[in-house]
Length: 553
Image 1 (cartoon, rainbow, N blue to C red):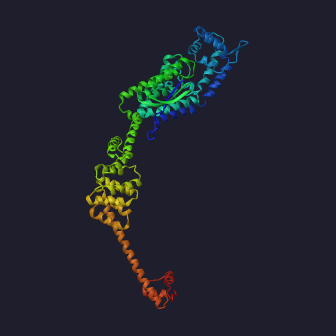
Image 2 (cartoon, helix red, strand yellow):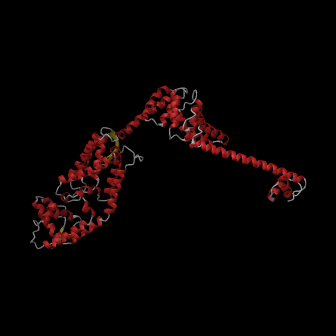
Image 3 (tube, rainbow, N blue to C red):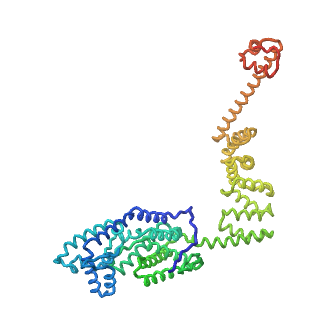
């Protein structure tokens, strides 16, 4: 036995294999929900068969039929499987009736009267019991929807690929479907991939029907469709070397080899298993049909559909080459050879323009020449990356502002975008530096009003008035200027109110001191001097804090 299973990719959950997951869920739903009672229903039908008169009628006729077909060994094997006592069949092993049920020529001969004539006295009894037995069989979901070549229908050509014999059959197919399927789905796309699954399943069934047209056995399972996906995998990757797990008898290992090698190995293994295990319950013929169908359809898709994600196939090799070049550039930087490292890093950056790691290395390699265009360019690109953490962005901005010669070279759009990021992160000072820099050289830029208003709201109160006045001066017709005028007016109103409160407090304090010196009762005295009502609490507070004599209310 040979097992080959590719392990060359991890699932990218940013691009989830939705069709693969849906197929797995569908297969599981059919097994656990629709097939859940099949074992009991089939068991009840087989029990009825053994307890009925059908074995006594059909078994001798079946042995005679086999001899008529020249299958004498099969007839002897069948007759030796059960015992006969006093002319009655006893000790029928489980499943023996299926040999009769799945022999289409024999069942047809019984029903059309060739093997059990209409005038045979056993015919009415057989007909009634055989009808009841088949009615019980029909209660099982698998009996109605499995592919049976001799009873082929349009429904069963599709439904059979979603049925499974037991839990291990289901788990095995679903594991293979997921491991290989998510890769093939990513490359082919969802429509091609779903079509591949169905087409491979149809090819698996078609080969079964073509080579065993009289078979009444149940042909079920997603293995034909899954085999097609494995064939597609081999064709898609072609001569590219991939890592896969293999198991031969008791030997297993993980090796790397061209993917296309898997296709002939898979086909040869299935053909060998078919020859050596012709009586096995495993449908090796369906595996061969699925492999061939999937490979052929994928070959066509690969050559006629230019929308396939071929770049995904080469991603690991490209990543390995990229890592090798990056390691070389890092070694050169460690050896203080930035001029040799920069061309390598620049090449890598052209392939992945937003790679923060490469940009960082280029920035550090250019720091030796702080007046160079490269130093300014890489610093600005690093600062503009959305994924850069705020703390790192602030550190880089401070460093660039300090080292840049003759000074930072921000384009207007870059400066304002960076200012917005700093404001969003609550970093006011660098945002002020950037906005004021733009204001000095381009006073009418359309984004300045909103940023000046944000600075006024988030910045220091002492500087807020200056920002509001600058906004009104340079952008008098902007909506933000109207807001700024309202904010200045409110600020002035608060200042005037505060000034008035201070004057009132000084006047009141003078009144209380005069009254205290004169030894008068403070409340009526202060009322006469101050001209306003004075509360007992206010007088008590004054007496307590001033220690004045004669403080009677």
